[in-house]
Image 1 (tube, rainbow, N blue to C red):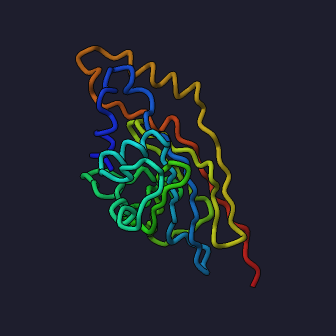
Image 2: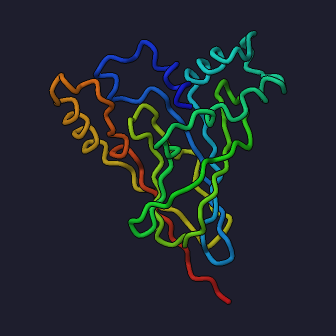
Image 3: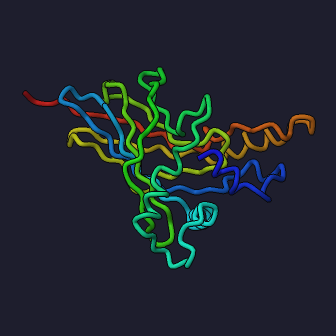
Length: 212
């Protein structure tokens, strides 16, 4: 993924551009809840924007006729494309906190890929060490804000008594943080800015008590 993002970034590296996203992903999250009201995993569906999708298909030599329809062999080649690169320190752009403590998670596994309306739709599954669902806070963001994630396709749970509340980011405050970063000296203007957290929507999980 990181290598593919660097390919997409060619020609976009002027300092001001570093403060704004260039890849846009519409996501859906479905959390697995066990019989003890603990979250044990999440299925993530990521629909990449059409321009980034086109860049990836061209880079990988897929869909040469440009009709937006991939053969089974081409889909197999695309399967898991965004999980190939996993550098040290990369956390998969998904962060889960239980009462302020960050939950460490293993790498996701690819479970599906498709092309829909010219967009690559990648489906991944990620295990979560069993943790009580009640009170969890979930954020999905790229620390560098090169990728912008929007949970526009919904959040769901395998248990009907759990629900999510989404608190949208304060964009004015986030932009102020970006301006603060851009105001640094020219000596470090090319350092990677990590302002993505300021643009992240916060997902809070609540579960009603289960009757015996």
